Amino acid sequence: MFESLSQRLQTAFDSLGKGGKVTEQDVNNAMREVRMALLEADVALPIVKDFVNRIKERAIGAEVHKKLRPVEQVVKIVHEELMDTLGEAGKLSFATGSKPHVIMMVGLQGSGKTTSAAKLALYLRGQGRLPFLVAADTYRPAAVQQLVTLAKQVNIGYHEEGVKATPPDIARRGLEAARQANAAVVIIDTAGRLQIDEDLMQELVEIKKRTSPAEILLVADAMTGQEAVNIARGFNERVGLTGLILTKVDGDARGGAALSMRSVTGVPIKFMGTGEKITLDTFEAFDPRRIADRILGMGDLLTLVEKAESLYEEEEALALQQKMMENKFTLQDFLDQLQKIKRMGSITQLLGMIPGMSKLQMSGQLNNQDIEKRIKKVEAILNSMTKEEREKPKILEKGSTAARRKQRVAKGSGVQVRDVNEVLDQYRQMQKMMDQLRKGKFPNLPGLPGL
Image 1 (cartoon, rainbow, N blue to C red):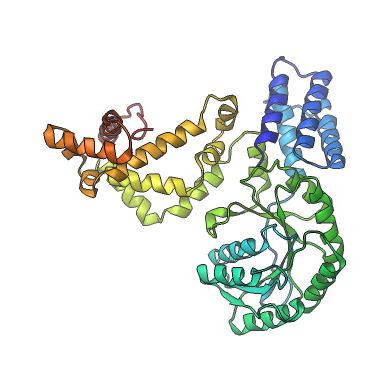
Image 2 (cartoon, helix red, strand yellow; image 1 turned 120 degrees about the horizontal axis):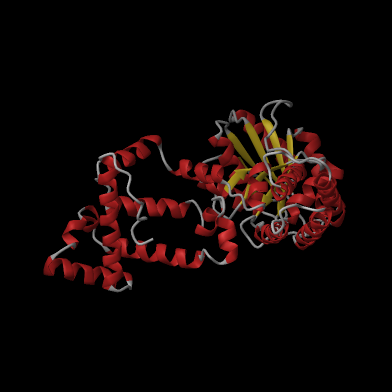
C-alpha cells in the first residue's frame, strides 16, 4: 500500500545524505519532497501541512543525538512523527459495557464490511473469545447470505432474519441470540450506502441505541483517497467511531487514507485487511511502528516472524529442525516448506518486510518477478517428481533409469533437464552444508535448491 510513498521519501532522504552536514536548505528541500510524496499518496492537505511543519521545526532545531549523523537524525524525526500521526497500536476495548460485548461495523457499500466482520470474528476466536455474527444489512443483494456463508465457512455462530425485518430489530434480537449462545463478542454487520445519507445514519444511531456497542468500527477501503476524510468525518459525527479498519491494503492504494482518517477522527486504526480469503494471515492488528518502518523502508521483521509462526506448530518446527541437523531433510520436506512460504503472502510483500530489501526492490537490483518465476519453476519440478523420488533423491543421480526419470520430470514441469539437475545439485550442496554444521563447522550458505 505504501510503496509509492516509501519510494518518494527514500528519494528525499538520499538527497540529504549527499553532504556531510544537513543545512536548513537541505531540510527545506527534503520537506518539499516529503510534501509532494504525501500529497501524491492522497493525504489531505491540512494534514500534510501540519506534518511537514512539525518535522521542519524539529529538524532545524538543536535536537541532534550524538550517536546519529545529521541525515539519520532527520529520518529518526520523520519516523517519530509518522508514528505520532498514525496513532497508537490498535486494540479493542472491552473494559465497559455489558456482556456480550458488541462491535458495530459501519462503512460505505463495497468497503468490505461483511468480509471484515468474518475476519474479525476469526481473529477474536484466536484470542480466546467466542464471537457471534449478526446479519443486519438488509439492503445489499445477498448480503445476509454472504455473512451466513462466511460464518459457516469458519464455524462461527450467527443470527439472521432475512431482509424483511428492520436492522435495529434484527440487531436487538441478534444480541439476545448471542447471549443464549454464551458468546463473548457480538459483531453486527450493518448496511452501507454508496454515499452517506440521513436514513443510513439514523438507522445506525438506532442500532447503537438498542445494542450499546463497546466498539463502533469504520471499515474503509484503503484506495478511497481524499474522499476518506469526508467519509470518516461523517460517520464519526453521527455515531461516534472508536476505531478504523482499513481493507484492501494489498491493492493499489497509496496510503493516504490511513494518515487522513486517523488524523481527522482522532480514533485509532485498529486492523488492516488484505485479500478476500477469511484467514488469520489476511487480517492483522495495526501497529504504527511497523507501518512507519515499512514506509521508511526499514522492513518489518516482527510481522514476517509472526506470519511464519502462524504456519508452524512448535512440535512441527522442532521436528523439522531435528531433520535438518541429522541431515535427513528431503526434497519432500523442501516442497512442504515452499508451499508454507507461499501461504505467507507474495514474495514482494515478504521481501519488503526485510530491512534494506525494499530499497533494492525499488532500485531494480532485486527483481521480484524473476524470484516468483524461479519459485514456481522449482515447485513445478518438485511436483512432477513421484513421492519416492522426493523422499529418496539418490534414485535420480546416476544410471539410465535416473536419466529417464529426470526427462519425465522435466517434461512434466515444462523445463529442461538441466533445470532439474540444477535443483538436485543445489539440494546436494545443502546436504553438505547441513553435514558440516552438524560437525561444528560453519560453511558459506549456498541457498535453497533452485533459488
